[in-house]
Length: 250
Image 1 (cartoon, rainbow, N blue to C red):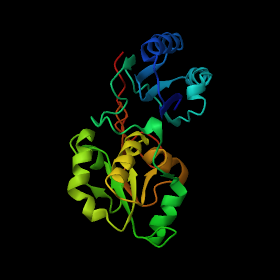
Image 2: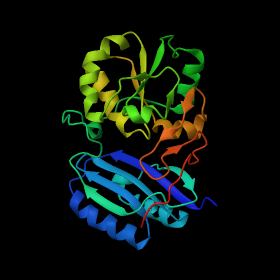
Image 3: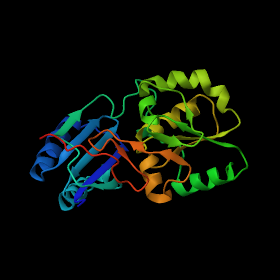
Image 4: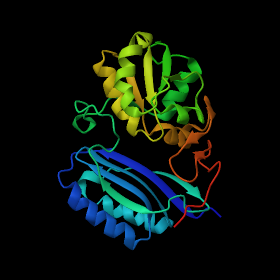
């Protein structure tokens, strides 16, 4: 029975009190018996949690009472076992590491495109203005190998911080096209889309909510394989069910 609710969510928002917030969120999550990881930084919050539905949703509800997180929209999936072994709340330099301080999504995000629009563009082979559409996978190579959009551009990244340099090497290949950057849950492609625009590409979008939101809203159309996730489930199918689950150690 799939009675463990798993969520992932992030928001780029300036946090000057990350250390204080860490202690409060750790106490709250422990009290609710949650497992997973919350990352905090000056640039925002990134979280992956699992537990009973009431506990997980109660935690999110309390988090939304902070005006900075009022519009937080977690992506949900279910599993039969707890895929996280511990509960950790950490303060980091970045909630997703790029080592590119000039990229600050909390100051203004790149345009996003929803899953159904992406599916429609891929059906047609072009966007609404008639420009050819390409999808750009911003994930690491081993993640791409589990599954990606059919025909997606894959720069064989070994780590996300390699992305800005890869853009400089390959940007000529993207000229004249509408580029949809994508990742697992949206956080990496949010930074990636800003880098692409700063490199001079004028028709760049991020896939809103990443692959997981695409699966939720558009199913598996144009996607080949599964979506790798960084927990004991290893990968999720088009229906957001675990492909392989290894019970997390306490």
